[in-house]
Image 1 (cartoon, rainbow, N blue to C red):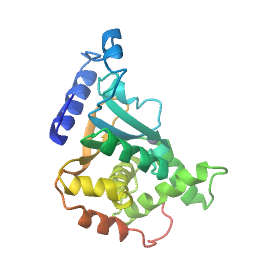
Image 2 (image 1 turned 135 degrees about the horizontal axis):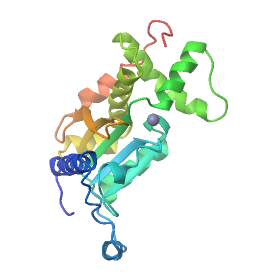
Image 3 (image 1 turned 120 degrees about the vertical axis):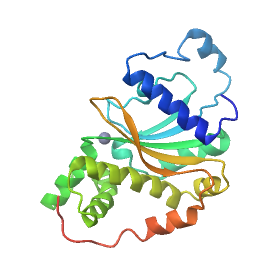
Image 4 (image 1 turned 45 degrees about the vertical axis):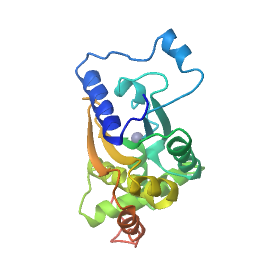
Length: 225
Ligand SMILES: [Zn+2]
């Protein structure tokens, strides 16, 4: 796909997810001919920053194939420097027009963070870093009176969208310039369906989004799980 717009990329993702949900996937771009065709270069139309959950396989749930999606996955779609670098590579070197943050209901990373906050403990090893990255979303949800896991997941997806824009000046500049859009979607494990929960369309002045993200971290009322 060449010179895809952010809106076209989003439409492609929704169309593929609809095929997957309704049980009529086409499995495009998965044959030997296409494999050979893309061996010399890739032109993916979306970057996905998704949760690592084994049930959230991007090419399957969006019914795509080789060379279509540039996928970065971490538990709870937490965003560290290597994730940011991967996104920046995709949008600058590969010219990808859309960044999608993909979370899902019953997310284990969000549940682990709730547990940690509720018990005042942090998991051993590097899992602590995942939990710490999710805690600001718990605080934000608490400020809004949201306590169910799936409601918190939606907040965390929105927070991840904002974190990408706040921490990557390269992405923010591309979005402001109208060359890239950012969308957050939540996936339902049982239905297989995505829905948009956050959106920063191409052309949005990102300063406002970034300011909001930066002012979001003051400590809030207690540690309500
Ligand atoms: Zn998850």
